[in-house]
Amino acid sequence: MSKAKVGTIWLDGCSGCHMSFLDMDERLVELAQYIDVVYSPYVDMKEIPNDVDLFIVEGAVSSDHDLRIIKKIRQNSKKILALGDCAITGNVSAMKNLVGTDAVLEKGYFDLADINKGQYPDEIVPKLLDKVIPLNEAVDIDFFVPGCPTPADAIYTVLKGILEEKEVDISSLTRFGK
Ligand code: SF4
Image (cartoon, rainbow, N blue to C red; front, side):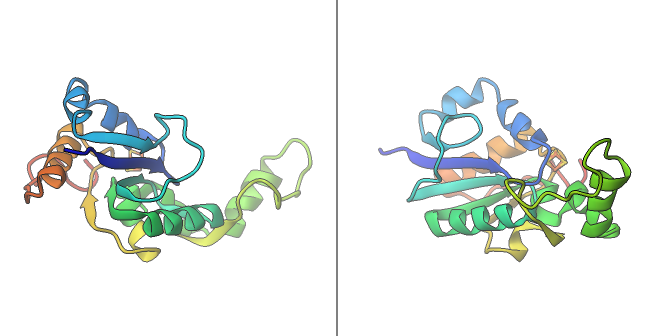
């Protein structure tokens, strides 16, 4: 049986949900029999590959770079799993929406700047969107797994369910804000 090609990525998240992925501990060895990780912060792959079976995405969409990446992932993946509250609702990443992008840039690059006050980055650093959005406002999403961070047990159960094409109930394993 060929292994499922799985990618993982964090967009505007804190990496906490990826840490939970690692918290599956010895179950990662079991999962490695069924999946090949073809793109991830865990592996040294520079380009998002074609024909990915499942992409696991942490974090919200906050910049033009995030938007480009999530659209590319949608193009290249059969299924996308939104991992964690930031990916599903915006959560912590979307707190910026309360004050707006201009206010955040002013605080970071003017009020708090020691040098080059008022020089807002326009090269190399991705341009922030006017509003942070959850993944499903940018592209269609197939699976939603909440939590902050999503507990390892919930990630494991969902991955097993997807691999075995079975419906699973994770209501006792995670919830929004947990
Ligand atoms: S949901 Fe929580 S743990 Fe996951 S990326 Fe967002 S802030 Fe971090």
